[in-house]
Length: 170
Image (cartoon, rainbow, N blue to C red; front, side, top):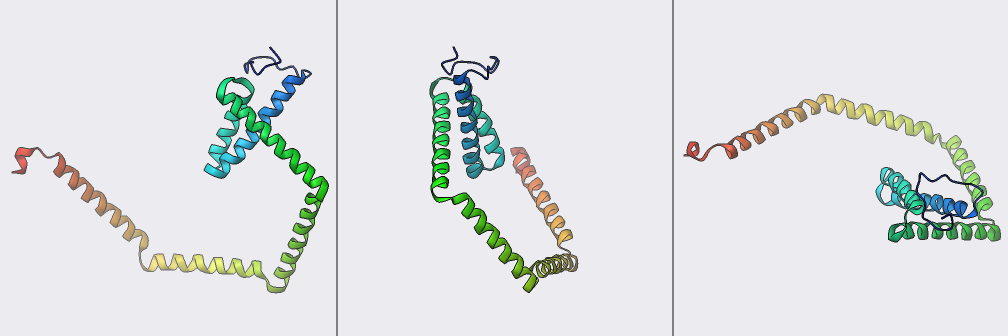
């Protein structure tokens, strides 16, 4: 039935069917919105997984999860439409581009005047060399490896004591 959300991923998609196109738009919107939220809350891997999951569920499942995914897709489409209307009314996109371009030009001018990029590179190089020198002089790697070895030996001794039969402890 093309007029409901009941079709499986194995069903042939007919692009001229307006309902299928509506479902596809909801699936994409749901996936994008869920992916963005998932990435912001839990990182890129969860974002990607949640995007694919929401897109699949919104296009192929009935019930609570399918309805929720489609509702989130509808919300995302409404938000997109409001952003487009806001941009048409206040020209936000062009103003943002102009502000970013002006800011970039100011940054380039400051760099030309104060040589910030090269000073930052020099500072980073100096910091790395100083850190390497400190680690070599104070044998940080060797001491760290020694401490890990001693800790592992202590843990092994503690495990041996715990596993030792009761009659040998006396």
